[in-house]
Image (cartoon, rainbow, N blue to C red):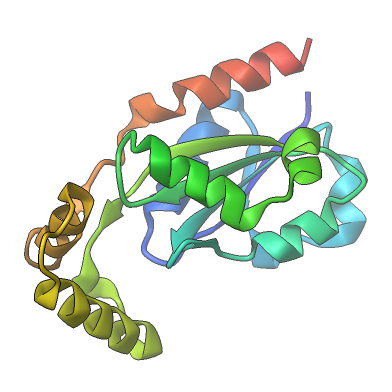
Length: 173
């Protein structure tokens, strides 16, 4: 089976997952910017992975348009490990029900290191931080977000790709 793992990664977590998945499946791996629409027919299986920033999956709209006629496997790489509400929010904020029914979706935990953020995003995050710091009765998740400003987290581990790799093997049969 000829396959490719495409990715869009700002800080390296998604790229790391894409490389591990490609290695395990013996797929090609490439940054999305290096992929052309004319190549779609060259691959039996396509995986796309991207990071989540402020609730939005990077480059997803472009990918959904590019693969509107070919179902692919999509994974989101975000800051937390196993937070069901966050996973459901990512799905509902980025896909409509038809897209979720057409494409396969997975979530992989990434990490949070606010020191790597630059530009306008850094400004927005600092405003968000100040709002959170001043909030009374913070939720556990809000406390964890604030903790992320002083204690970066990284949940990227190869074991997290197991579900995607097994799924791809089963779907190839």
